[in-house]
Image (cartoon, rainbow, N blue to C red; front, side, top):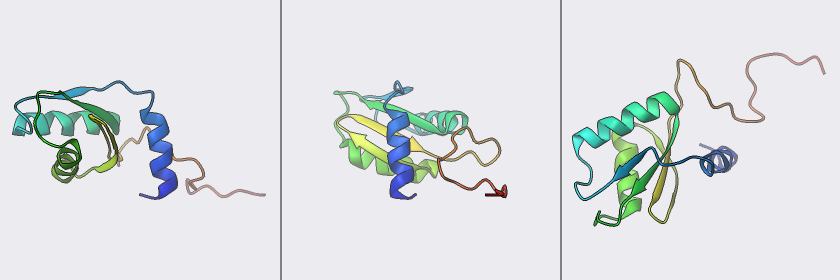
Length: 105
């Protein structure tokens, strides 16, 4: 992921509400599966790490990204933003990307 792509995703993530909350139970297989389903459906998700979760949000983000084959866009405080492009029907189009169409300019 390029710096420009990451900056674009950060801008999109600012408008998102967290879709999942990670609590005291931390990273269970069920939570990881819920993240995987959410990221498949939405591509870009925000996760809230609750105060009763003792683990470091940065480490949790890395573990989740590894387990779901996604990329960590950012971790701010106790919020994690993950991205994984849906290869079948992508909803997020990066600005400036060539879509394979030829311009006659």
